[in-house]
Image: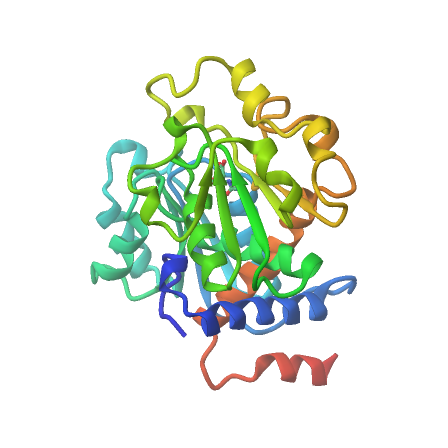
Length: 318
Ligand code: NCD
C-alpha cells in the first residue's frame, strides 16, 4: 500500500480495490449501529489542515477519524497564523512538533499535498483533500464506491463526466481511478472547459450531452467553478444550462438503471435542476455517507500499524 494518498494515479488496481473493499468493511461495522466507533486509531492524531473552504470533505474526514477513535485537530487557514502570512513550511513544522500522525490537507495550490508529503518537514502520512485543480483522490474513491454499490464491478461500465472539467480536481482524480478500475470514461464539456492535452487522457471526449446519455451507466455532473474562472468560459449561465445542464428532459434519455452523481456543492438550476438532484436515481446524498466509509478506510490503511488486526479484534469485542 502507498504511504501517502496524493493522487489516484498512484493507485494500482489492487490498491484501489483494497480501499473500496475496506470501505465496505467499515460500512458493515458501523452503519446502523448505535455505537459507531471502532478503536482502531486510538492514540493517533489526525490534523485536518484546510487552507480552502470546505463543508463536506472537512467534516467527512473529521467524522471518519473520530469513528476510528483518533484525536482530531481542525486547523483552518482563517483564524490561524496563515492569515498573518505563515508559510506551508512553518505550518507543517508546527504540526510536526505537535506529533501529528496523519495530515489531511486541502490547498488552493496544485501540488501542495505532494510538497507536504515529500518535503521532509513532517513525518506524518499525508492525505490529499483537494489541491488546486489537480486531484481530490478520496472524492473519486467515494464516487467509485457509490457506483460499484449500485452497478457492481466497474469493468466496462460507461461513466459520463459533464461540465467544468478544466477546473475540476474531482474529474482528474475520477478519470485516473475509473480507468484503472476498467470503466470507460466519457467527458462532455464545451471545448473551453476541457484542459489542454485532454486527447492524451484515457477518455472519450464528446461535445453533445444528448448524444451520449442513452448508453450511460452513470452520469457525474461537475460544479461550474466560478471562483476559479478569471475569464468568460461560456456566453451565459442560461446558455450553459441549456447545452450542458441535466434537466428532466435529458434525464429521461438515460437508461432506467443509470444513476446521477454530483460531488457537491451543487449550483441548482445551473449544471443540474432541482428535480433531477432530488430524484430517487440521484445518489448525491449517498455519496456523502459513503465518503465517511471511504475516508475511514483510507485513514485506517495509512495510519494503523500493518500488523494490527484491529477490525477483527473489534468484531470479537462487539
Ligand atoms: C469538490 C471540490 O472541492 O473539489 N467538492 C467536494 O470536495 N465535495 C468539487 C467542487 O468544489 O465543485
